[in-house]
Length: 444
View 1 (tube, rainbow, N blue to C red):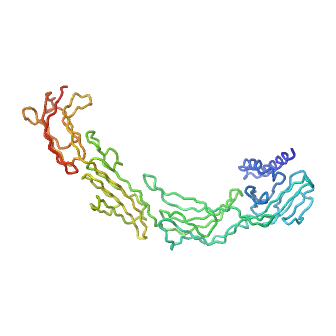
View 2 (view 1 turned 60 degrees about the vertical axis):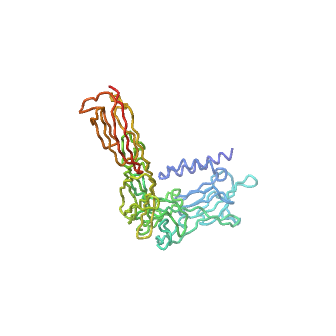
View 3 (view 1 turned 180 degrees about the horizontal axis):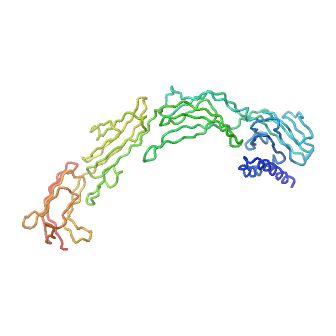
C-alpha cells in the first residue's frame, strides 16, 4: 500500500510541475505512462530543475536511473518525495554528501549518487547518475564529400570534422556505459514514381562518427547534419547542425520504358493490345524512353540486336523502332557521363511467326457475330485479297488484313451463295501465302 501511495505522490508531483509549465502540456500522458513503468524503483524521488530534464530508466547497468539535465544551474535539484526519514545523500563511494534533507541542490555533471531514505530493512535506496546535456553538445567544424572515394557512382562518403563528445554514465563498480546518441543526416535526391522524377528529401538517422556512406544522390544537393540526441525529450528547439557546400551529383539512374503502338482488330492473332506489350504479331512498333536523371546523365547508347547481329545503334534519349521479322530481339540502353558513372537496362522483344487462316462462311445479318468476311492472321508484312462471284466478277478487294467484306456490292446486300477468294501474303518469317478457295454468304 505504501508503495502504491509513493507512486501516486511521484506522478502527481511531476504532472503538477509540467502542468504549471504550459509548453510541456503535451508530455503529461507520457509521464503518466512513464510512472507506471519505473515507479517501483523511482517512486519516492522527483526532479525539479529550472530547465528541462529527462530520466532514462531502461537498459541500465547497476543503477536505477540516468538523470539528464538540459543545463545544471543553481536551481537544479533532486527531491525526495516519500515519507521515510532520515533522507541521506551519498556518492558512489559511500561518502555522505548531505544528511536529513529531502532536497539535493546542484548535483554535479558526470557524477553518480545514492539516496537512502529510512533505516534498517525498510529503507529505500535509489542509485542514479547525473549528466548535464549542455556539456556533451558537439562542435561541428566542417562537413564535406570525399571526392577521392572510389565508389562515388553508388555511394557518397561524407567526412565530418568536429569535436564529438560521447555521452556515458559510470556504474558503482566503475564501468563506463555509453548512452545512445543520434544525428539526423538530410539531403535531396530524385525518386522515380513511374510517371516522372520527383525531388525528395532523405532523412536518415546515424550514430556520431567522423564519416558516413550514404546512397549517392541523383541531383545537386547539400548535406545537413543535425544533433537530435534527446532534443524532443528535453524540449530543445535550437539544435546544433552543419551544412555542406552544394554537391553536384554524378550517380546515374535510369528507368526506361517501352510504348508499343496498339492495334484493335480482333481478327489479328497476338495483336499488341496494350502499350506495354513487348511480344506479339508483327509489325511491333515500339518507342523507347530512357527516363534518366538529368542533367547528370549525358550520353545515351541504344542498341537493337538479333542474336549477335547489331541492327541499329542510336544516341538519342529515346528512339522508335519497328520490329518486322519474326524472332527474338535484345534492346539495350547504356547511359554514361564524363564522371565515369553509368547505368544499363535491357528489353527482350519477341515477334510471333506468321499465320493466315480463311473462314468458309459468314453471316452479314447485323447481329454482331461473324458479320464480315475477314481472315484470321498474325505477323503479315504484305497482304492482297480479291473476292469474285460465281460468274468471275470481282466484288471486293483489300490490302489491309484488318479489314474485310461486309457482304455488300455498291452499297446493296449481295446475294447469298458461294464466292471465291484469291489471297496473297507474306509473313514476317518469310513465309509466302498463296490461297484460293470459296466462302459461303448465308442470307440475312
